[in-house]
Image 1 (tube, rainbow, N blue to C red):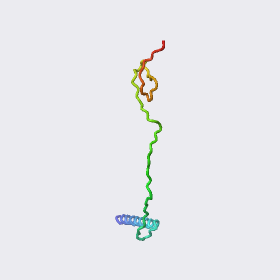
Image 2 (image 1 turned 30 degrees about the horizontal axis):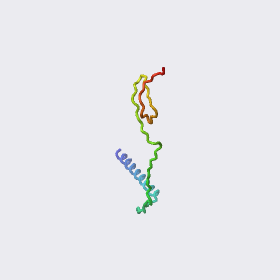
Image 3 (image 1 turned 135 degrees about the horizontal axis):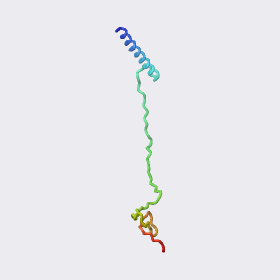
Image 4 (image 1 turned 180 degrees about the vertical axis):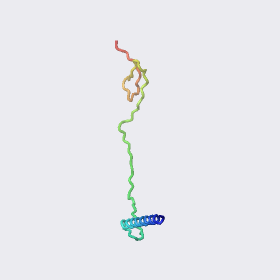
Length: 102
């Protein structure tokens, strides 16, 4: 019984060796390197002729404007925001109490 097991193991090892040999030979033939010693190939060297430069320019789309936060008016009362004239960016806005016209 032991001899049959040993013969089976030796057979499997032999079969794997043959398959590995076929793979190695196929790989060498495919790469055009059929059992020859590797030779050095010339390498290509890239030498840039000019290096591009990056120039950033800032172009504002709108003129600079100060923005003011209006004062906190009382909630749930008759106070409203009031601007006495022109209030650019909310600057100059005040709270005012609404009084109906008699």
